[in-house]
Image 1: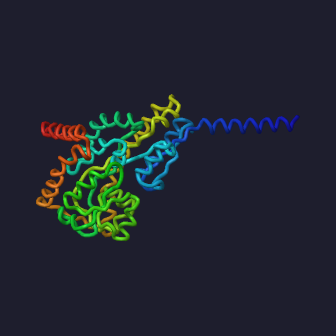
Image 2: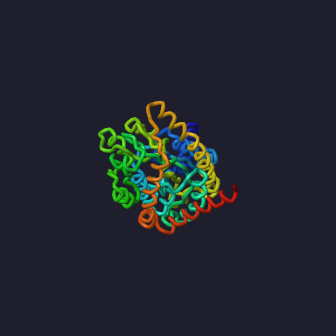
Image 3: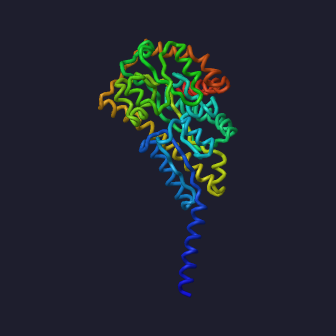
Length: 338
């Protein structure tokens, strides 16, 4: 009798463990951000808060910097191998080209201006992504893109003399052709190929925020950074609708709020760490190339000459126009407040 009771108790424990395992929802999320980077750390905080809010019923399984480029991640999401991703707008452009609206070169002057536009344009971007099966949980920042180069670059002509990496990610063909039409020598690669391309001198230059150049250890091969904020690089944490529906409905509102809150905290961290990253690279040999007013005007001319091509081919006209409208609206408000 005692033996039977022991067996019954053991079976009950096994069944309970099995039921708990089956009740646990694991959301598989990937990012190209390296392990232990600021973006990875925030994803780990989301996982901790999700598990706490659901008593372990919902958790994240995070893949940081291990599953290839953003196109690879989104491909895995589409076939169901992954459920979610923290993806830059460059990668999201493979879902809808309108997500490139925030990456218009030299269209923004400050974090405040960029944030105002992003908050406005996101209201039109989110329904577009939802129609493709993706729910946006939060928008985030990667930082201001600069040119990192093997030789000093102050002017556009300086950059034309170097082999420039162009991201073969998302819907990038039109953007690459635009660079080429303006006389730049481009090499189209996946972001995971930047390091070997630098090591073999296949490329001499790339565009990246300082935090990204430091986190991926690219900067030792490109000891110069041009003091020009070319464009903001933003991104979003997205989850497929099918995966979102697997989460018990009683948890969804709180879990979405957690990701939103962490997105706001990430924004603060990225802005604080951007200058720290630059300073850290300077200590290790990076030189900042100043851009005087004449050179800055030359860069602005290149950017604005490209706007008619960007509008329509890279960014659909409606969303390009809305981005510029929001930017001008912000500037008008700032002017009125002075």
